[in-house]
Length: 285
Image (tube, rainbow, N blue to C red; front, side, top):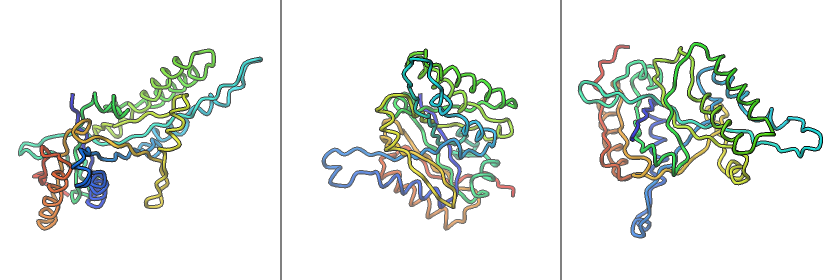
């Protein structure tokens, strides 16, 4: 089943995202050899989320406690790899009465440069996304009792630290705990209708540990240090379509520029089903 995620952002950030995608497109020479089109998808650590309560959950939410556990007498110490959750966040796509792909005044105000930005809606084949790319789409659930979620996660963490459990059992608990943390957010953010593309790294196998060392990077944009990973995603397999909606407060010249540029970019990625249009939302400042 296909699911969509809409990301509201500034014109500059949208241009940077699209430019990064275009770098993954095969050259003419590669085309002749059957090269496939892909985009590099960037996902950031949970510690950069906008919910302070969630940031606190992310800060404690590692296996450091388990790795420091004192082994029982005669027991061989088995350290666990600290787990890492990486996310690409957006909102549930919404179609307006006039067919525009995005009709969310609150999101344009908060994240779309006060209506002068761009909204990018990506549509995903969820089965391929999980099977091939190791990513999951998660619909956020909102709660006023975020501390209850933290306590449940702490209980799961203690269970996960039980060295008497098998590796498979602990890995199952770890994934349940991480998903519990990612699924929930405080009701203060309910208007966002958030959807998340999540990647869970960090089981105990050496292969995953090796992959973590190669994947995790640092981003110091605007003086803010964040960790992120990038995954190559096959266009037409996991990523099915991209719709680009231009903010309702863009000037006519900006709109024309974006329409030409975005249509060319989608065609370059062989995403012929994607749309590029300006939001007809009546913007009230």
